[in-house]
Length: 406
Image (cartoon, rainbow, N blue to C red; front, side, top):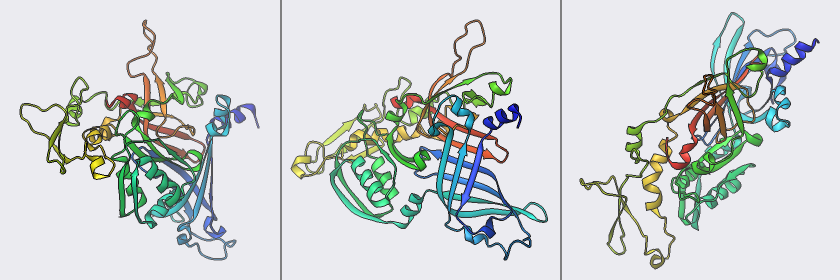
């Protein structure tokens, strides 16, 4: 093999797919594309495999193929890009291993007289376990992070978890619901150490599949894991071959004042949502936030602040999370995506990571153009095609979400 051929192989993405199924079904079948998706808004992983299959059996196959045999079978996907080892050593950077369960076969159609294509969708075993399980349990005076830890480790049996400590302690009862629904209910009321109600339950391919329960505040405050730089395309070494290169980018939303106001923030970043409360024990009213001349408030809630010890329960502190939770989650809406970019296959990236983006100024001022800076990965998809082309598409929000801003 020539030296240039060896170098070219280092640039390419190596893909290996293994399905625990009979040899008959895997005869003359080829994987043409794999898509691996993570999102801060999804407590599962979205794995999609596109397959081409030869219809007619040959004399070496003793029986006809039965595609139902793919049902509920484990699938292992190994993706590697060796060139990354030249920049950052270690398997964690250059290689991604995925272990999933096939739950769906769809979009099957004929390509020509003897070849068909179809798609296999797979998910983490924990998603299947969640669908099978109903939870009926109470947690007296426990934090959301304690409840989530009990559910993920005990009920789901997740091998890898990443749980941020939350407050306050509160009474929680799961009434015959799925475990992930219980986690969602707890994310709605959890506060970070900075008193920010922005917890999300999501999953990444890290370490074969990791469940995360983290706040946007802590995620956006992390150090960047990688620095990407945009440059005009030139040689292979300066474009796709370079793991630091940005292939394409655009900025869907830089700011949106009307959306910020509707979600509770004015043009100065001040919280303008108002909430009224009533304590059923004392009959007293309270107000949180600054009322306007119109005197209207979208929230009227029952609060036990000040009398929780008299009632012998933990205070859920509803006034601390309710008026801020909606605008915090709105920061992850699709129309709030600040940056979309396409980079060479980057197996070391995951949803919830922070990246640094640099767009050099080629003018006399030099430096970096507006739009450069740190971003939090909201969702991402690895796309690997037969032949070795692998790219990673990222949707990011500004790291200012740590302060509750677009």
